[in-house]
Length: 80
View (cartoon, rainbow, N blue to C red):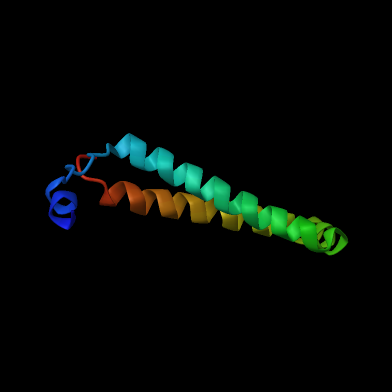
């Protein structure tokens, strides 16, 4: 039984750069969605006050992190 299980090997599926970027986007959006849901589920008034006070700084940091992450990710992809 174990020999049959080990003999049936499937080759690894090749993934393109476009699929990798799409998967990364989906994972990041899902992670931020989960974090946002947890934050809102806690205490919304404090969250609103925090974002109302620091929205410009937070927006620039988030955009900067996205740009840095995707630039690094693009450099790691072969063929680009």
